Image 1 (tube, rainbow, N blue to C red):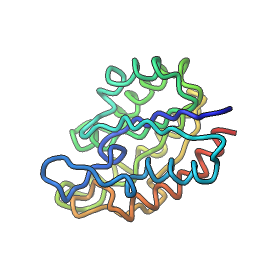
Image 2: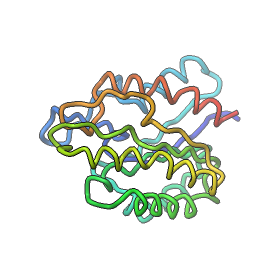
Image 3: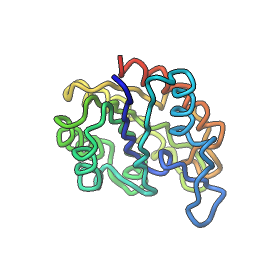
Image 4: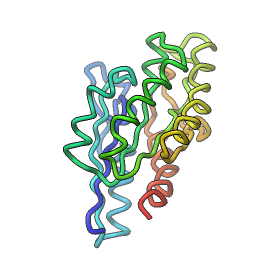
Length: 196
């Protein structure tokens, strides 16, 4: 295949939100995991370029995802869709099962038009300015097993970023620059495997 298209559906950690900013600014391209993956891939595969389309939206939830992204997936007909959502649902008071049900709904709605789907359980929440109780952390941990089951039901590929020890900033939610670098390192071989 010549020219690979990947859609990345996610929240602020896909968008590349810089939590040091008070106005929603992003980390530079050389920090964001999506751009790091694309740059590294294209250096190694100049004849089979990768286009990572970043559909990350600050504050995006699984509850809103189908309405937000279904048309984009149909329009773009990508080779791969990466879905990483659920953190904002937990922070908004949805329980893990409700969040997983909404992810299942999204996967079913895009399954016929996405070439392949890689579902990622988000990195765990950590204690910080936005996360002040262990309950939220445990709810974020529960997404891993629920998403694993959903991926099997929808014939999707799956990874649990809760197992990757991604560095999170002071707020307990957002990736640090080092977190983006490690996330890119962990996801690159998964993407390569998806595209074989």
